[in-house]
Amino acid sequence: MSYSDKVIDHYSNPRNVGSFDKKDNEVGTGIVGAPECGDVMKLQLKISSGVIEDAKFKTFGCGSAIASSSLATEWVKGKTIDEAFKIKNTEIVSELNLPPVKIHCSVLAEDAIKAAISDYKKKNEKE
Amino acid sequence: MKLPIFLDNHSTTPVDPRVMEVMLPYFTETFGNAASRNHSFGWEGEKGVATSREQIAQLIHCHPKEIIFTSGATESNNLALKGAAEMYREKGNHIITAVTEHKAILDTAKHLEKEGAVVTYLTVDRDGLIDLEALKAAITDKTILISIMHANNEVGVIQPIAEIGRIAKENGILFHCDATQGVGKLPVDVDAMGIDIMSFSAHKIYGPKGVGGLYVRKKNPRVRLAPIFDGGGHERGMRSGTLNVPGIVGLGMACEIAGKEMLEEAARMKRMRLKLQDHLMKELDEVYLNGHPEKRLPQNLNLSFAYVEGESLLMGLKEIALSSGSACTTASLEPSYVLRALGVGDDLAHSSIRFGLGRFTTDEEIDYVGERVVETVNRLREMSPLYEMAKEGIDLNTVKWTAH
Image 1 (tube, each protein chain N blue to C red):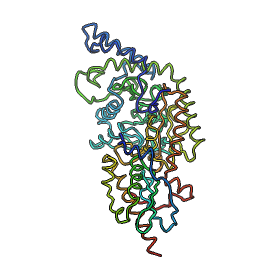
Image 2: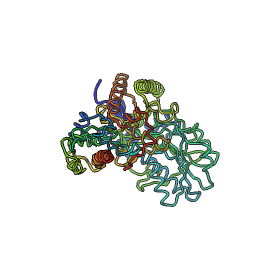
Image 3: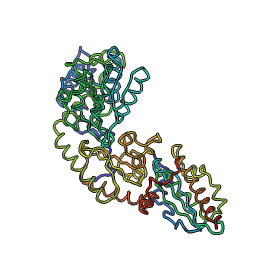
Image 4: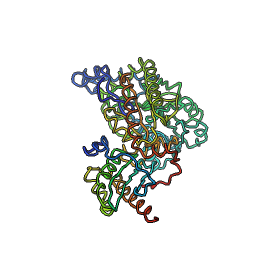
């Protein structure tokens, strides 16, 4: 299988790899996927007054999974929670030219954004 | 050292220049149909084919007339199973094979099941070996064929062929061995090993693609196989079709070279394989060997690098040709069925890489590959959430994952 140039670029120079402190109230963490399925994404968002100021990821998965999560961190930065929540996996598919067998990677990235936002919301409801 | 490096010699091998040299005249000069009995072109072709039969017979210790030429091991496996099932239908309909066999065996067995055959698929232990007691227990009075591979194409595990042959003989059952990864790499003696039918291929042993063979025993017992296709009655009526003379000549030469160089080559392969394994295990933590540590092809190293997904690892090693047991490298969504059968968890199956050394692999290449794998695994672990969690002391088996 050959990869698109964009996938190769994100794989070779992944943006925003790393972690924030999970316990920080400004941080929402989303972990999706499963090791036995071959991909796990951890996406973390640093949110201040409803705006995503920073994002970091770590991904276990194929090149397309790494690229999808790397792209997701780029896209969410500067967006409000509501805007980020609207990011669709299909937009990731077309941006990265993912083939049909790799569509699940983009779904996972969308799920990771949503999971991170709900984690943030849940954390801040309790307060 | 030249890049890219080919370290996927279980999938195929380059043609040895010595093999190509003997093949060339058969394309343009001695191009006759080996079945043409009335002119010198035909005789020359027939001579080339006869030499090849001799060369193969010498390598596997059989009579030259016991060799049937085919298009490759997939066809040989099909002919062995389908041909025996049809020919011995009166005697029984039960076949015994194993779960780690190549798809050319498993899918053929499934096809036969649809036609009324009963197939037992033996499981393997953690090392990839079948249980001989389970084999004995599976035999019924309807069993006509046992089909077990010599060496596995993914994990290199070598089955106890001589013991299986003995069990087959004691029970009056035919024994077919898919020796695609064995012939030319490991010593084979069809009599000593009790093999009645055996598949092999040229392109796995530095011969050309598109040609292979099937050993079919002529005496004690005389094995007969119903042909898959009808036609001119070539190859003792078992495989009609004009012989691929250049390919057959190449296969013969590949066998001759293998016979002469096998022992030296095996020692060299094993030394390099262990060097690579030691390098990787010394530099990286949580690297697991798949398959039996000793009973394996000298050329084969199959390792799982925990917390790193196989395809992403291959992507980082794009100048090195390797293969992974991860699902992502194939169209199917499941990881290697062979690794699963060994009890390797799906997570580690997704993290597996097969290194297939070959005749032309150099020490320099092995050192380079070792360094690049270490570098890439480290890089990917740095971005692996699983590695991070494991380092934090979280037991990944207790985490509730969102399977998808």
